[in-house]
Length: 607
Image 1 (tube, helix red, strand yellow):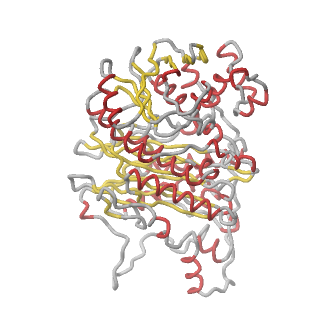
Image 2 (spheres, helix red, strand yellow; image 1 turned 30 degrees about the vertical axis):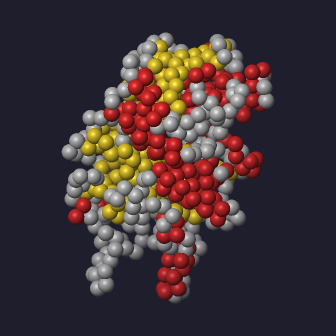
Image 3 (cartoon, one colour; image 1 turned 180 degrees about the vertical axis):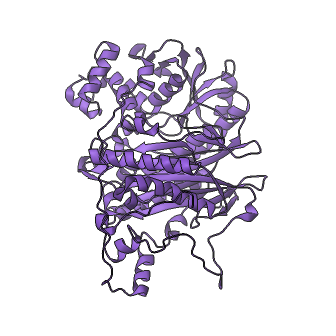
């Protein structure tokens, strides 16, 4: 395809996920029709994956502040104070669509992306976890699960970070859309945090890491649309990862930070060079000039469109302190990584891109960064009847029911999965996968950090508000029963098509529930991700707002383990032990689900 002479037509506009209204807005902003490179840039920055245009209105309701919060949403990752001068950096991200197309590479690069979010802030990664959802009837499930688990293990094990497990579920709603949510955390000193905002004009803009290829082009746009059978053929849009290069990138970036050369830094994640450059300049109210002739490439005859939208992995964008360029270059040469000055920051609100001495794009940068469309979509939270079945005449064999439950893929041991992950690397793991929470010791201290990922999609489908509440409170309970004081959460909101009022209702309800529980339990939300359009041929996934919680243990000698001993006394704590609504028992043993399975259990926050 000759991109240089490509005519912008209605079909091409639709393929880029841009509506008629949005295209007219683009024309109004730049007073002309965009060329192909400019169309691709708007598509990347205004799609759902990067702009959150369907959820921005509701995400503003989430509590993001607290005495422990150092940095809330908007950066590469959230940061909280864990005392003694230490800070914890953490975030959860999704790589759902790519993992369905290419399970190994999709999951592998999902791990790579979240790790870069952590060490971009200046932190050393200390743990990863994952929340995985798969279908249970599709013939692809075994291959998807195998590929995803291999991808997670391959990247994390090679990079050298412990995996503490997480969640794994199976439900027919995920037959056409598996969910791969990846969590990571890192540790640093709270007076040594690095941010992404460029601070002033005329700073050198530096490209770091791997070379740019054609892999991943259009990945962010693909993740902002429903799937169809045709989408399964889109393997070229999935990125290829290299964990060994990522390890070198980590060490080079941290070394550069130690010598004071870094002013701002941004991971080249979704939408690649476009998103990283726009976000970096946008947060500093600046503009950028790029010279693509300086960008290291590994393929011939790449057009500006391809270079700006490539999602090749293991790449960073950075602004350097003036005069530190050659010292920085020496460090990256030592680690055998590319280093190139590809542009500079400017005061003017422009995003100017040159290639072969030709101006390929000239756009208002703030319109791309902070003035993307924001929709107030119609929504409705369906009121379920919550009919509790009459169980008076149901005859079951208790032992048979118990055996069926613990043999069910949703409730059996996950050891076959997590034993493929290295959970002991770095030698600080105190509670491995299979516990109520994964626990990592902090070097040279008695402190430990507990991590938990939780969600019950059945609850969220039946009652979105209570479902959101339950996701947060389950995380809270898993932390406290491990001996930790809960501190903060991150969330990964996985839903179907927000243009459907009932799906948008699920989103609104779950966000309201998450917000209420977070406020009541003093667990602010410091980072997160929204993944929408998880829908294939009109069939949506169950609403799956995954909550990642972190808590602190002051003395790791006081950890509470899940392991029991012979002759231990078993005590049931809490009220109403007879609640069966929406339970695993009804669904798996009696095959009763949805409205017929009764109400979602309520939460008493005080208790």
